[in-house]
Length: 337
Ligand SMILES: C[S@@+](CC[C@H](N)C(=O)[O-])C[C@H]1O[C@@H](n2cnc3c(N)ncnc32)[C@H](O)[C@@H]1O
Image 1 (cartoon, rainbow, N blue to C red):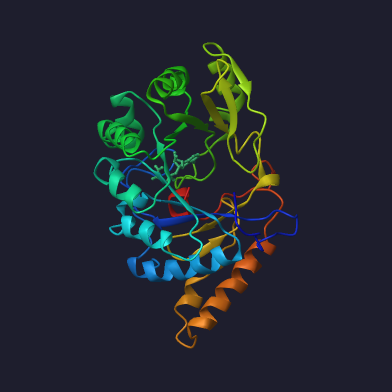
Image 2 (cartoon, rainbow, N blue to C red; image 1 turned 120 degrees about the vertical axis):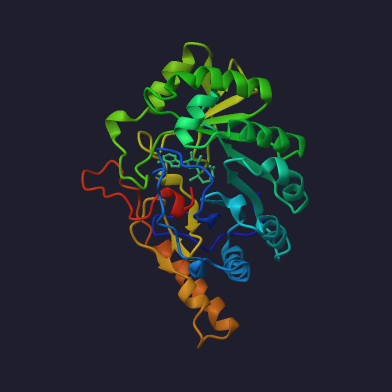
């Protein structure tokens, strides 16, 4: 529960409390729905926010009402000082809850240190339990490392361990039921994410997307699912499995958008503020942070002003289902998923 009111309220009355922070656009996997295998269009290192710059932005954002920070990327744990970033966020005045979305590859080595630094929980992405498929879907033979990361997160008490899965037709869509069985066995909280038009290759196609309805239909062949009544601003629609208390979630950004309750903002690794995953406009915070004519208090004021401008410009919805929808110029990996 938040300890202070958010001042980040948009023109539709939505208050913003959740900031997704991309720590890097680099990634150790090449998930086919995210990045082509030969992707090389990285943000130049000099443009990435330093950790001091990031803390300055967070200080203002927290002051304005952000109380939840999710670290993401790219692969956030590729940032060499990721543990220190978590520690420093927790040392800020009024520290927010801090979680991380990761592919899990570095978690076996880092879960304990992340927890000790104040990380509350993890979301780990895992689309298949089959090694050959994993290789095909990510272009890397690293399934065992993800599973080791999942075990390490659980052992470190980073609870609940959430697992995010994207299903693709003819690739892994037959794994919904086995994935949920495994999740129930392991104590993971599984959520299926509909594939979104955010891939670097621009290959997304509505007709070849597994919808929430298809996933629910598929799961219902093996489990009794009943909706969990309270959802709030959470992206996932949750369902009790066989009466609960275990649940499974569906994040149906495409077929059942939940923009009306959105409380999220995003900060890219190069210091651009985005008011929506699908926004085409960004608000440049890096320019303020690096303006040689600004002293520290002018920097803080400038960030505060731009934070409010970005919130005020937020549209009512992401527009994916609008015939005029155009995919954002940045792919998911460079925005921060
Ligand atoms: C972009 S990744 C970044 C964090 C980290 N590397 C990871 O794997 O979790 C965050 C999440 O976005 C999901 N994702 C990436 N591209 C997507 C797309 N086009 N549609 C839906 N989800 C996507 C991934 O499956 C992952 O769960």
